[in-house]
Length: 215
Ligand code: ADP
Ligand code: ADP
Ligand code: ZN
Image (cartoon, rainbow, N blue to C red; front, side, top):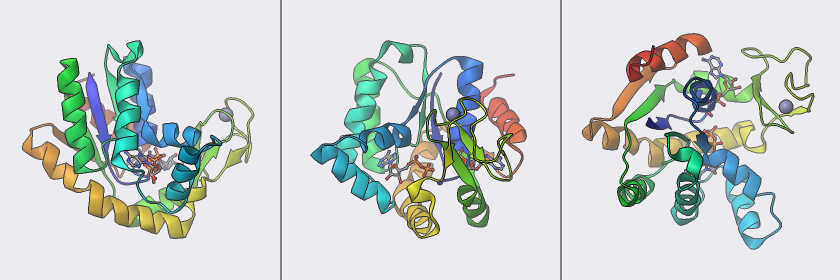
């Protein structure tokens, strides 16, 4: 299955995509994760990405499209993939259509996770990630067994730089202006699956499986 996970920052895209990865055995392609790794590189590109992400803005379409194109051509994507956090603009969606067409493939469904803004702020302000392995936690909704320590690898749990309140507001604004138009884009193409994302992680997962016809 070739899927897109769409939704505002903090909606639960990463959380749900990872659950589906376990179930279906197809890779999650998170442009956020790929860009976070790239921004550590000591190069002009690394620096450019670092500055943009720190402000909560979007990395230019050409850069992100190139990354995704390269990633989709890897053999583990042959069985399917979950795009998490891409596309985020109409030009990215159009570029993706083009790339998939060249590959003779297409998107099967777009899972749109709807969560109101007050709830997003709660989720993002409590989000913690493992410095070492990237596993995600929430101080209230998904706490680690030992405070500040990753259950999986013992790594230190940190708050993402761009999860600080001022940057979060900016990211939500960017989402509303640049990404929300994709809802209509995929609705028109008959691909959109609307999921009410306000429920426990397990319940949201059950809703997604139902919408995709997976039992
Ligand atoms: P996104 O990838 O859309 O930005 P995440 O999956 O990282 O969102 O979730 C944001 C934060 O909210 C994380 O700390 C995660 O543990 C928590 N979270 C995810 N889904 C739920 C849920 N259904 N209820 C409560 N908290 C959630
Ligand atoms: P979230 O879903 O929690 O907002 P992500 O990890 O998906 O966070 O994205 C973090 C940051 O990475 C974004 O604020 C943006 O700067 C950059 N980014 C990720 N995906 C894209 C994309 N498709 N286009 C442009 N910038 C992106
Ligand atoms: Zn870890």
